[in-house]
Image (cartoon, rainbow, N blue to C red):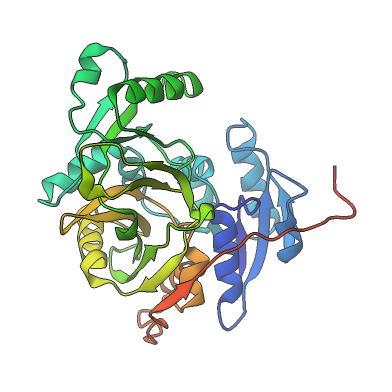
Length: 356
């Protein structure tokens, strides 16, 4: 089976999908990796490699369709969110070639890519959700609406591994954060979301349904936010909310920690996934806040912890292929090896003959 995985370079979810597929047993997948960077180290780790333009390039769609034809691709997994959006909006081009898309439905992707609408859906389910406001114009009136400091500020749509997330504990800091993001991402809306819970109570949860909406499984990771590798921002808590702890922490896109069944967080996430009609992978970010589960983000895709989950026996890309492409209704009932503590580290790679 020929599987194309895009955006395998860097440390995004494309590389995670590549790793997970190469862990699958028995090893029957031919992995064709693709990336915009011809010098990415991961090209040496796949069966073959294709260079693609960036998803923002007008030639991207035709280029990836041509790769699919040339390589007789059976299954396609996107490796970054810009590619996810392009592929999702042009599904028929791939489906006409008989290609399985390893992604959720278009409606779920559109909903979960809008953080404010996602928060509204969770709230309507009667679940706790951090207070959230959308801001497009920064002035004294809009700032006055934010009476729940400290807050997290981020673009209202799409994600990016926490790379565009800022903390604010005062109104001056909030104005500065919004001003900075407004310059960096003009013509964008931003959400200002209540900071909740302690760093010790943060989880990332994977929930997987098949293309018919049948539940395949779920798994949780209680994040270890003591390592600088997993932290985007750490500041001393100077707010009046001492119950949040001495330090306020925003996690990075590099997760590590304790993998387990964690039913107290996995089951609420499953309920949300089924309420929105999930037809594929969803990745939830949540914290326990005053004994309630607070979901503050849902990414409508495979996550940066995909390979970690595969390491303990919950291999989401493989499970999707076996259920959707191969039609296995009774998947392997072997339970994941839980609990398992997983840590990460950087590696260095030297290339003697770069492509460019």
